[in-house]
Image (tube, rainbow, N blue to C red; front, side, top):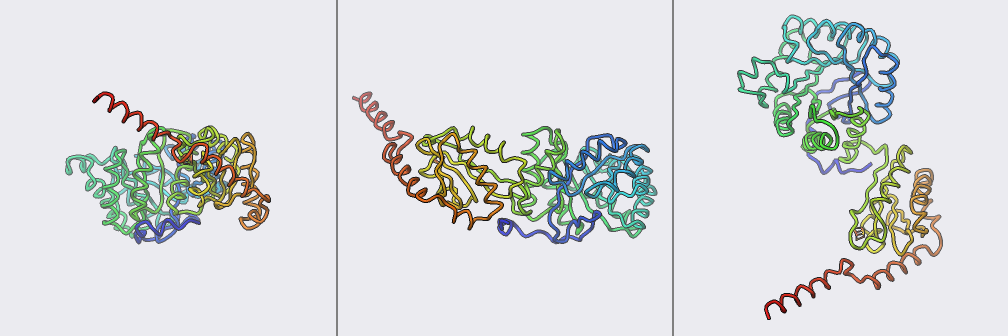
Length: 412
Ligand code: SF4
C-alpha cells in the first residue's frame, strides 16, 4: 500500500453510516459507487451488471426504482447481490416505500423533485424504523424551483440550502442516518458546493460530477472534481457519472482512489515513459501490448515500460517491475535491479511471465533468481548506447551549431 494519502489534506471528520455491510464516513475507506443501466425489472440482466460492477471495484450499486415492476425486481435482486443496493427515487415517494419493502440497503431521494413535506417525512420515518440510510441527492440541474429563484440560480449556497431543508424535515422525525451529495455538471460549481457542504454538515458526503458525458472528457471532469475534493480531505464515497458502460465508472472510481493512495491497489498500475529521441523501441506500442497482456490478471503491482536503458531503470526504480529497451534487447528490472536481458521481440512476453512470478513469489525471491551476468550485460548495453548516441540523443548540439552558423551567415 502506498502512503501517498499521508501527503493529502487530512480527511475531514464525518459521522459514519452503514450502507448494508459498507461503512461510509467516520474514517471508513472511501467507497466506490456506480449505477446500473438495465431495467431494474430485468432481474437477471441487472444482477449480471451488478456482478460486473462489483468485480470492477464498486462497493455499492444503485438501481433505479421508478415503477412497481422495478421495486418487485429489487425484492429479488437485493438478496442475490454481492454488494449493497441503493434505490434511486425521483418524483414518487411511494417508490421509496416500495423499495424499503423490497429490502434495499439505502435510498437516494432527490429533494428537487420529491417536494411534499409529509411524503418526505413518511419515507424518512419508515427508513428510520428499518435502519436504512438515505442519501439527500441534490442536483444542480433539478434544483427546487423556489431555491433557484431565491438564490438567483443553482449556486453553491442554493444546493447546500436544498440539502439543509431536506435534512430539517428528516430531523423532525428523528432521522439522521444520512449522507449528502450536491452534484453539478460544472466542475467548478460542484467543487464550491461540496466545500460549503463540508463546512455545513457533519454527515458523510457522496461526491460526483453529474452528467459528465462520455470518456475521455467525462473521466477528466470526474477526476478534476472528485480528485480535487478528495485531495482536500472532502468526500466519503464517490461516483463517476459517465455516458458509457457503468463498468467504466466503477473502474475509474477504484483507480482514482488507488492513485491517490486512498485505497489499497487491487489491480495493475502501468506506468510508461512518454518516449523521446532516445527511445530504442516504439514505447506506445509496447505499453499498449503490455497493458492488453496484463489486463484482467489482477496483479497488484506497478509495472514500468521505459523507452531506453540509459535512463529507464533508474527513473522507474520505484516500480515493482519494469522493462527498458536498448540495442534490440529488453532489460527486465525489479525495483531498479536488472534481473534478465531478453530479445526485443520477447519483451512483453518476458514482462508478463515475470509479473506473474513476482506476485506469486515476492520481490526477494525474484531478485535472488536473477540471471547471472544480466546486470553486467545490461550495463555494457547502456555504456555502448551512451557512446553511440552520446548524451545528446536529440542532436540538439548539432542543431544549435547549425543555427549559429546560419545566423552568422545571415548577419555577415
Ligand atoms: S526513459 Fe529514455 S526514452 Fe523514455 S523518456 Fe526517458 S530518456 Fe526518453
